[in-house]
Length: 133
Image (cartoon, rainbow, N blue to C red; front, side, top):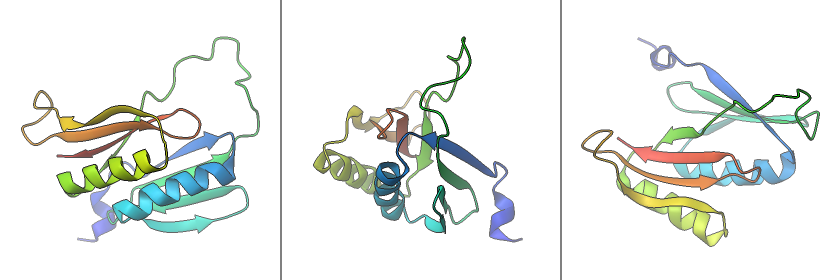
């Protein structure tokens, strides 16, 4: 079986207010997690996991939502780490860059016995989780 066929999710795309700033942020995060950069364009950049799940970052066309009742949306994005140590490394990286941390690394036994995660904000305030489980 092809490794890419193990990924049932495909990809997701995040629209960002400043592609240059977000590219720098996500590159440091995804390089640390071992993701492969698969696109580096003028209006978008993307990475993929070994299993083939892609995360695309695109420059938003509008600074504000165009719909009056625009509130529901992405609550947070979780990407998996291979070890607890990797979660801790991401926390140290984000702290060194003065990134806002919602929750420091800790165990979440209510999710699974091994669940260990850190939560922080991307440049647009999108909540990012890096979790080992």
